[in-house]
Length: 466
Image (cartoon, rainbow, N blue to C red; front, side, top):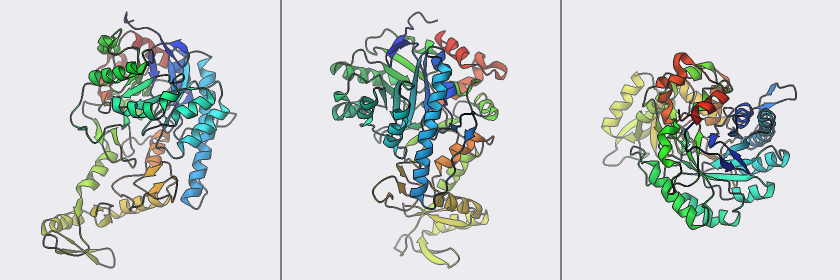
């Protein structure tokens, strides 16, 4: 064990400085969260499209009977609440009263506040903290106060936390359990890169976290821990952060490593894939319907999305001096106008079988196969409103229920693909989120010969600094 590693007070009790990162849509479950808590750390189950179980332990999958998107959205929310309660019970029973249990939610998931109220009302004493990112969760403190649980906002800069503090959190200090700094260049899943930050230029987290701590100290949060998330693998690489006054109390979150454990619910194929990745196989992209950057494994799913983006040309409905070459679209041959150079590209794509043109909100056309065009349109029609705002389906969860522009066929139904990969074996044609350090599985001797540890073994290993 690293000599400087000490227990930290999290959600009211002293625990190991290790938190399981929450991964949505049936990936961080009550079983994995409970195992981390039983090991004396903090387990996190995801409240994002969780898996529901009956009293006999059989899964109850969501069935959408609603004819409208709004009706299906209500079905989704009702299922989400029941499922998260189910996972909370599993986590609590598995933990045997040890450690802490947190629930992770995304502020930009549909009806997030309603889900939180619905779950916390029925799980008093089982959930000790709420972790929340993907947006600016300014009402998180208010909800935490109502149910007397600690709250852990996820931010990627001091500036973001400062805004949350001034707007809301300064009024609810006692239950602010910690501030999660999520490295926007290294974390898996959705990342909080701002428009001022270059996705291609990595920034060292140390000065960014030190800046966050400086502000926290200025407002009296000296003892509130910072949770370092994203890019954490061996704690021996972070030893200079321990007992460091510029960093203060520090805890480390692990999101990717817990996927390769016995308690992890993902398929063996998924675990094997992670054990073979090379550096660079995980990278940032902006295909997500949320509009956020996200980090995912390059596979056929990502390659197909890249292909859509590359087979793209701007068009006009009326010609101008630059774009005057006619291009007939659809069975009726309706004309739009492109440049001569783009017309040549389009003809080449059509010869390759990408014969279907689909309009984007940016006045461009993408070209896909007829089968892919049919799939995209079906997915858009079948939308059940899983996000607060979705650029793929044109949905938002309030007011007039539309974001006000065309659905974007360059994106995808995130609910569908994450459910598919969580419950199937096809890891090439579905979205596979991952942290950027997943390539370290391959050379880490702990995983030699495809070894998959238990959560307890992983926690023991991490505490050794490895």
